[in-house]
Image (cartoon, rainbow over the protein chains, first blue to last red):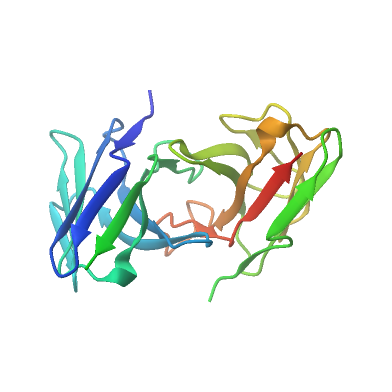
Length: 111
Length: 117
């Protein structure tokens, strides 16, 4: 069945790297996504990776995709207080562009 | 920029009341979705629509209905609100999958936080 799993909390010190992990079950997805939700707001697309890629880098963000293990990760370099948010992994395995979301990882950045 | 607007950011209703949550998008998207978000459960799909007057049940449709009379507007209706429907409701829209360019991105509104007393 369709399922996306991620840990619920991550706490890092400002300036360190953050790594948020996700596992998914549908191997036929074309894209996999990371969304960010800031307090009191809706979700915004942070980045995505095409399924034929292993890695995508975009400034401080690095996405790694391990298709064999169905594992997706998001690395944020030099984490800042403005990165404090909930990060959702999403898999379009629902059809009709439906996205299946993980439970979200709350990232807390402390001084 | 794509804009998805939810009419109410905060609502407080009483048990048994009928509740309407309105969502409008301005980018001519075919697909529209209603999710509810609860801590530790992530986003769960209530209903979605891929065309005017078309609707499909999501994972948790019980207690909800929807209406899509115009392409840009998708309404979520709680016929008789109950306390277990207290939640954050998120509307989203996206292009139909065969329209290009299309990465399948969902565009979200700011959310409507509903409290049922």
